Length: 447
Image (cartoon, rainbow, N blue to C red; front, side, top):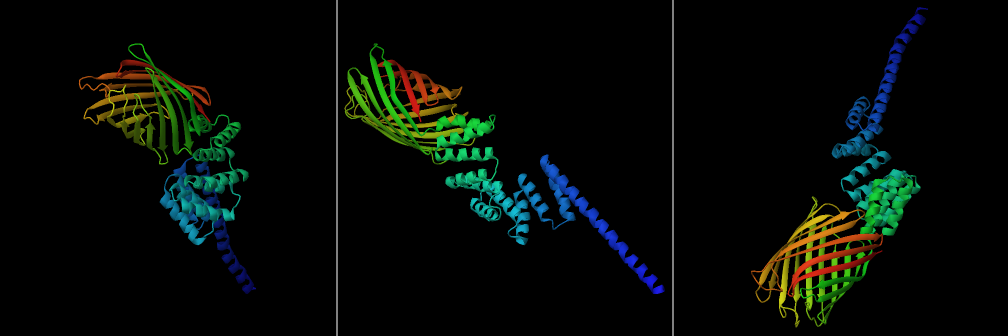
């Protein structure tokens, strides 16, 4: 009997600590769950530092909790603490190389750091396990776009939509890819779809308004300038031009001008190429040819470079040389004219800007002079534009070192329809014939 009583007492003594340990473990687990719920709530409320502190408390209580460590890495990345976030994820992946959530979060972070090739590899490893995950497909599509792989980006944005990704976000990104490819029609279709889903989407509206500046072709069927000279005689300039915008990186411009003054004609062919393939850098090269010129240069060569800095200031320099042949109406016949033109611009938007320039002219006979100018372009309602310019300095046609001339011009560009603009201009210039008024008209068709 005594032995039996002793055994019962011993069993009770051993059972009580086990019960207390189980009760403590249960309370410990409840505390961890409460902290995790609190951290998630802080995420939703965008209280990121509180979320970070809360997840750190969980890891102290439960160092092996992989999902909380990944959550901590995610929130750290949202506060730009990339190095610590990556260290946590690397520790997780060292233990579990195929942990999907860690692969996904690391792919995001390294893409934000510009490590696109590594990000693509991580996203692909993640999608092998979760092939229909919308956010994984969206993330990979974005990295393809950021790395210039536009066709792959379109493919994966489409897959993300099919998988149930937020359609507005996916289609906005697809529109940006199509704009980068120069496919304005498809970009417009994507943006219209976004606005059908959310009519108040501001980014879609802004991008849609910007598309008319990204046409593939521009054509001026007939430009016209009327010159009224001091003796009331008239001069006429008729022109036509065609511009091809190649993937928004190259502009190829071809133009023809017919000028008529005092029963004499000049026919001029103009060719210009502009390269914009490097962000914010513009390179221009062009030339003009006037066979059997009466009063124009027989040939012209133009070169220019311009760079726009991040603070919306642009600086550039241009060079031009005119070759004159036997032109009886020209006071500078049989001379070469060289112009060097540095300039600086301040941009206030896509259209509005002010440009200050200085031109130095040198004739091959030794005469040289200078001119300063200021020009302003101001956009108003739906990409219409007003422009004005002033120039002051010497004249190469009137080779008088003591004479200075003041010239100015005014104009307006008016958008009649989405594909048609009209330009009207007035200029007051000083020519070899005297002070001259010029009135211009220029329609522009775009598609």
